Length: 247
Image (spheres, rainbow, N blue to C red):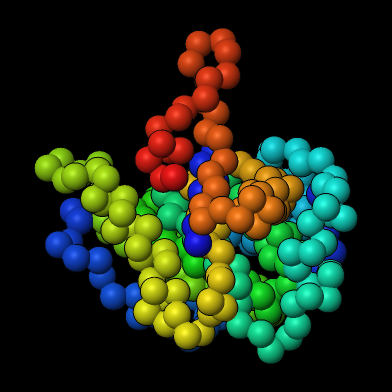
């Protein structure tokens, strides 16, 4: 099942004809040898900001304290999900040139994973063609994810949906398929009712993620989609393209 999110503190290069293989470059938790040395040296403050919701090093969307009682049944807090069960929440992202957004976006996802229970979740990220430190931050994040007990798949792709002569939608589809590749290739390693939470490079809060998961379950939906708001002129406008395309 797929949830789309286009659009608080809790303890704890041209596109190839076919998507490249998702074989890991390094052992889990080990940063790769790729990346720009200068950008790698700048990653520690970003990693700290991602892991600490109270960190104010970088400006980020302020999130309200969520009503966690509303979502308790979704995760380990309810006691309904036990250790030893297969993961049932698969967080998937395709990210490009968004280092400034990572403290809020990835930070909110990690908060959500801890609320739902790390043993119940998987985080899969595909980065592409960034030169602002996005790759380096996400790559260096491997070690922290391992220490936190979060299963984390990270890879980079040269697929460029905006490249001249390329079909944008086809390119985006390839990237999305890469992000869920482990789930597709190894379904036996996941709960049969696994929920895919797919997010783009947007600022969102833990409550936003929990609410859309809740609505999928509450409504018995195969798929739910968040509203995609943008500013056209002075007023916020709802962009209906994502919903009409994904639902």
